[in-house]
Image (cartoon, rainbow, N blue to C red):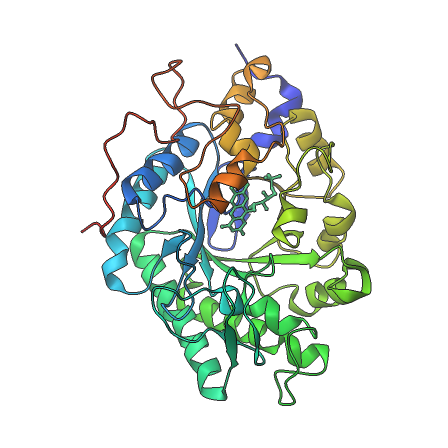
Length: 392
Ligand SMILES: Cc1cc2nc3c(=O)[nH]c(=O)nc-3n(C[C@H](O)[C@H](O)[C@H](O)COP(=O)(O)O)c2cc1C
């Protein structure tokens, strides 16, 4: 069947810095608990989404240094050059279908357990670690800040060598040291990295510029930023500092990927956010402050809603985590006029609960391949046990 012309706009290419997304369907970073532990399954999971028509396919959070790792949970790793081959599996799988591959560089800071590395977690100020175990994070010295900037640059260069087209700087979900610096609740520094908003934004600005200088000629630099924490004056608010931060950094990244924080607000269940597009009140302002493309999320499953987001100037790219998990072939089904066949995410969040259990991703709407003939990229129970070693 042919595509309904009213959806043509979703299939327009979008220029993002030095690269071009083939359409507006954008799989934002999401964990699948495959990552560094199961790199072949990771590549298959991302590759099948590219096959299903997503124009950009991203990794999950990818740790850039062992001083911020979240054992026993599993994300990506790009600690050193030995990690490049496992990422190459992913970028090759995505490029095979003409999509762009994005990587979310992440330094979890005081959200890190460091149970594997046993290094004291780093934070803007000495503060208790947000995690399952009673731990204290160490206040970062100027030397730590210089190291953090260097780790981002080194990871970005590795990412480019691994074949990524989009490199993320990340300040969201209460899980990133850059966001921790932005928040006065965590940042009580008295030097040029604390106090005024200008000072709290300084590290994010430096890292964005560092990464841009390192790989920005070849890769687009995306900034994932949570504009609001839904905590009122006790957290970042879109109507005040959230807006100010976007204004201060407006033209630095090539792409704004905006959402809300923490993770429970962002990936809200259908019980609490029954309607798609629920983040619009917090992120719609971003496009008025930047000339760069904007991607946002909100459990988008309806093609009409996606078109409305673009036409009303809310977003340039339709971001999706859960809808891409529920149906990796969602874009292709719109393209082929098979809308009725889309398996819509119902917002049950079994995908999130698997993540909390450090177990490979699952979905109530989709099944492993071979059960019903549809391919999902979600590992089947009949797969051999995954290798726990690094690939080479
Ligand atoms: C299972 C799961 C894992 C996620 N992991 C990440 C992650 O690693 N990094 C990140 O920035 N966001 C992560 N997210 C948040 C999503 O990127 C997205 O912002 C959120 O789910 C809202 O989009 P959606 O309604 O399209 O799912 C995750 C979401 C889910 C459902």
